[in-house]
Length: 462
Image (tube, rainbow, N blue to C red):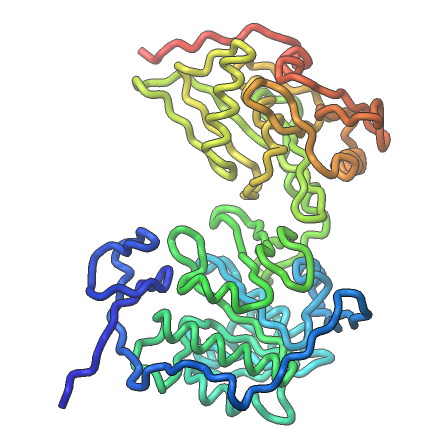
């Protein structure tokens, strides 16, 4: 009997290799290449014979808005763009233990009040799910539970006249199709299982939520094509040491991307945070050096968060740069501009930067707030109280304009801040939304606004 042919597939990017190797040439990942059996039937070319002509329409015309169903959790509805769309496929990823299953169980229980909901777990038994539901006080919710991993069995159950309105699959890496020889979690199984479940969602109008594992780099495990197949991709972020959890939309065919929902982990599960700015600033003390409040935008929502900096004498020949919640590359750029354009010396000091509350900031508008915190820490001079800072910094030391300035100022005024340091606003100069606006054109203007104090001399320990 002839030996079945095999191929070697990378579990990170899906690249095919003729033989096994320790490193994938396509994506550079190590120890991700797994042997998979080649299907017995080779694919044949597609012929146009018997096909139907595709009809085209113009761009101008009326289209019905996709009907949405509220989940009962306002922060989740915000990230989804207003609720679940009928027949949509949503992929939710996050670190182990971050609260994915807890959030989806709470959403399923809330939605079960006026819809049919099925929760299918491939990782936990029914008794384990019931224990979590009891802890969350959701045991009375009308949610249909099942523990299964065979996609054929799941399709036979859901593909019926009484199909549920929502089906939660936890997780897609545990599902398998018995027609494939590869193990669950491999590229072939994840891709084929997701394709069958998405096809069911479109055919029956069932909203399907797939839970995905993440790699150590924070991306969803499996082939990248999985994120292209679904309609919405959500990432559940947060630090284990913080009680805050951020649900971020990185792809959404039915709503805005980069929208966030904020939750707080408690003993009773995840609770919504309707005003995250007030929560992130709740533990902020008075005027202390090395702290600046940044007025940022997360999707369509303005969020105020405290940026903390510490400049300390370096005990080693190479100063240390430690960053939590921000890009270390942009920190190096801001330090270089402060040294070159403003004459401040950070070369012999260790620099530590932290975004309070566990939030991760990606927008360049945080440059000016980071610079304010660094200057404040270096000179041991607090940033003026009740002030917010935002703006992008260029390499020549100029402060560049950022988007949605008025929304940032309005949020700052709502929380009681009376002054803002920001880029020039053009014709909209002066005060706005009940807050005094001080426009900065150069980074040196910020140093002068902070009192232009003399920098501290950094002496090495010992």
